[in-house]
Image 1 (spheres, rainbow, N blue to C red):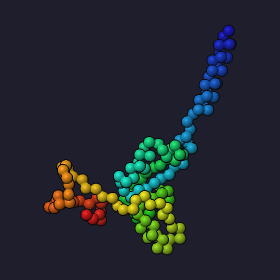
Image 2: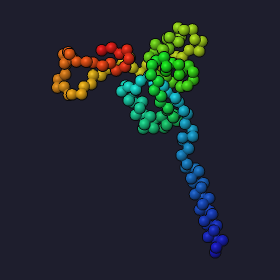
Image 3: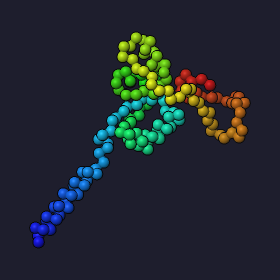
Image 4: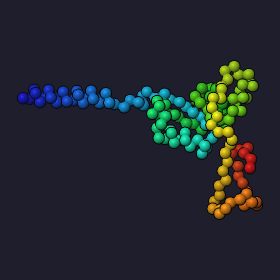
Length: 148
C-alpha cells in the first residue's frame, strides 16, 4: 500500500512538472531586443508609448528599450556607433551624414511627423482664447532653437 501511494505521488509530481514545462511562458526568452533612441519625448509618439506599456511589441516578439538622446546629431551618433538600433530624429541628420561622405550611411525609412508640433499651455484657463491674449506675455519655446 505504501509503495502504491509513493508511486501515485511520484507520478503526479512528474505529470505536474511535464505540464508546467509545456505551458511555461518563455516568450521573454524569445524576444528580440531593439534599442530605440528618440530625440525628444513628444505627445506625437503617444501611440508608441502606449504600445510599449501595453505589451503590444512583446506580443510581436520585440522588447523595446526606449532611450532619450537629445539632439538629432546625438541620435545619429548613437545609430552609427551601434549603441542603438533605430533612431527617431529629423531627416536632416541622415542628409548630413550622407553629404559628409560616410560610406556606411544610414537611411531614412519612415516619416512619423511632417511638422514639429507646438502647444500653448497656460497656468490659468482662458475662455475663448485668441492670439491677442498673448500680447504682453512671455512665450517660452519648447526646446533650444525653437521659435515662437
